[in-house]
Image (cartoon, rainbow over all chains, first blue to last red; front, side, top):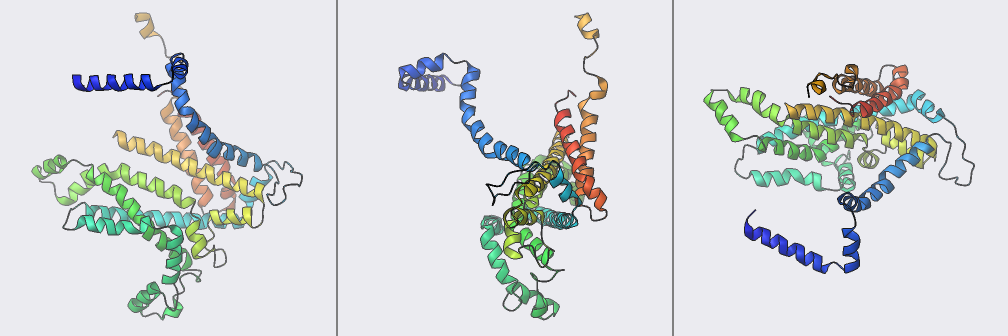
Length: 322
Length: 66
């Protein structure tokens, strides 16, 4: 630090001391550094406790009861592990888990593949790459409610643009391409929309990873006559891997909780083919009003996501330390 | 000084973080697969217990020394 900067800081500190009212200054001076640190952290801690920790503890407590939010005056009975037992032996809930797994798996695979490929292309820095980056990022900036509604129109069998394009290339009549009402196509309809919306996000994270690779590594590889293919597998991919994993972690956790898009597009139908875990949870909590049961279900999902996040953080640290 | 260096570490070797964290991670992974697999309802039934055990173990052992 230069002398001029030090003088400036001293002056700023003096001004701050002069501006502090005398009683406050006396009280602060009496506090230890640790106490002052706690004083600054306390509001955030209180907010966190009120918004995150308290509802979590309350949900855990409710999960052992037969509480119904629409009957607040009814006596609440402790049912022990009965709610958990019902969820974990119910074949409908099991189906919802399978629908969630199908959705999460395919969205992550597609988003990672397409996102990384796009990032790799954008990183080539061709003419107009900044413009195309902005264009690609547009879907991510839209509200899920807007995306859900306009994809409903795109999927319309009679007037939908998506249906028209598929019909044009495949020769199948548009009336037979019922993306949202066909048992086979509805899960893929949601996967397509989620991939369309969130691939830019994965691309952005991968692009950050690719841009963080120093040029001199590639220059050294060129000197060693490494082929572009070899450079990709030995430099680009290993060095971008922590970023790819971060993107997979974020998207994995988000997609486990996916609700808005599925609710807008299919509402869990046809039948229960697209009824992912969050839709089942909403039905149990706000249609059947089984609050205790749905709390237990939410805790099961929470443990799954929390466990997954632990694994990812561990793997991420390992990859980073390499 | 020499007495200090020759003293055995108080933490048992068996309770090292690395291997125990790996076991916890494996439990979480197995539980996770059991929860989302489409083959046997019995596996689905026991998935939560497996996952919970793995997660609790992970939280505890991640505080152990390396």
